[in-house]
Length: 202
Image 1 (spheres, rainbow, N blue to C red):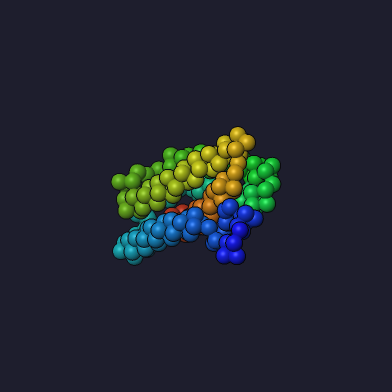
Image 2: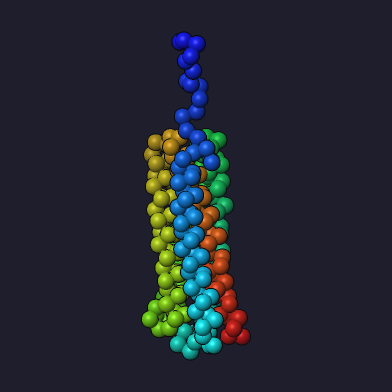
């Protein structure tokens, strides 16, 4: 080794957090999805002020019970996935596995509840403006949640198959960011689609 050479043998092979290009790629994805969320919210508010009656006679708001249970189930997914992310960075394989498994189970429960909520809406996407917004927004969020659930299941399968590597540890951290976005983005939707119309009917 000459005096101009640098020994990098002891440097880490992968970086976490903002030091990783994958982290920035995920943040860019979340920003693009956030723009779609903002557009949907703006569309809802614009249409709301354009109608004197909301949600209208053809679209009675559903009961708050099932949407609220769905909302709580989605929020709870943030706890085990962030625990799994922290455990993965520390190399704690068992805690990582438990966190992913609980997240995957909660995601399945949420999706079952979400499809039940679709069936209980009592109106179709073509029934009214409000009905169209509900179906489009719920459909958009459900597709994103299905993608996150499949992604979590793949990561869990890799860990259970004893093939976890540093790349998977980074994947779990990015997966946690995505689940956090899903939970936070549903807060305004839950209020606008269910809480606000229900309050108007009182």
